[in-house]
Amino acid sequence: MEFFECMLGRRSCRRFKQDPVRRADLDRMIDAGRYAPTGYNSQAIRFAIICSPQKVQEAFACTGWLTGRPPEGQQPAAYIVVLSDTNVGADATGAHCATYAVMLAAHALGYGSCWHGCEGNERVGELLGLPERFKPHILVSLGRPDEVCRVDDPSSDTKVRVEEDGTVRLGKRGREEVTVAVV
Image (cartoon, rainbow, N blue to C red; front, side, top):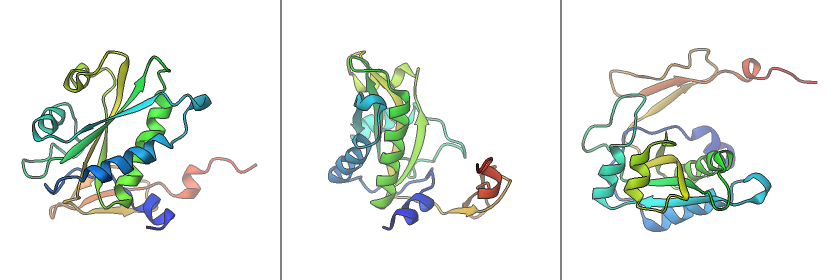
């Protein structure tokens, strides 16, 4: 997939087919995340994979959904949790960069993804059973997309809505609107 096709084509996915996410693909997504920038090259970012059906269901209970919770049969097939190893540093910015890299890699591999903030959600830490030094930042839901998303570009209407046929529509502000200075 060409770079700009990947960048501009990636959308949050909130309905998934129930095909398993291949472990090799999860590893490639993590590789993309670990190459994301971190402050001072601290590399404090860590990842956890949730792919067993029971743990996927437990993780699903920790998520919120902008367009409503996916029904049974359209829930995520796996998750990647992006964490900081606080023994190295609590790098929220690095976690955000790594999450976006994971999501771009997922899209390039044919998967859909959705970002769920989980800082302060103690259930995510308990679910993983990791030592307290690992601070969860973001839970990324993953699976093959089972919805269509349309982008109106440019549009000043950024509200995300689901049409009667299930198509998700959203607007992206135009370049002229978001570029506030050229000096």
